[in-house]
Length: 100
Image (cartoon, rainbow, N blue to C red; front, side, top):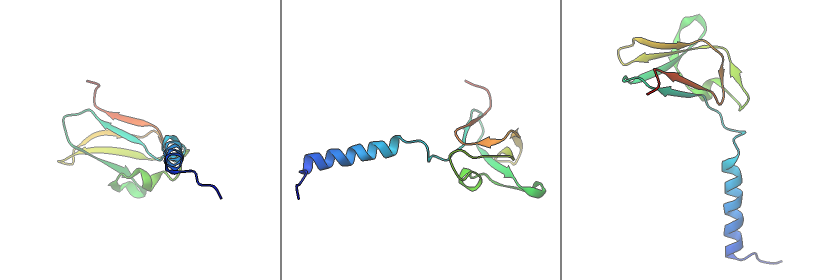
């Protein structure tokens, strides 16, 4: 049995880590960008019109998923600032407010 030696082992580990971190196929997420001057909380409207705090992992289960639903952005006083009714899909972005 041959030994790779520490430099080669370290290089192999670094290469494997690079491969794993550069693969985006398992990433789950829907990005929300807040361009308002208010602190916002995002809610997902569930059956019956109730709202619960939004969690991408609670809605989308794999990298190719989309789901129907409504997202609501509320400020700290509970005032609705924005609403999104389009499908919620991984690797998409909802920009709230106007660009700088």
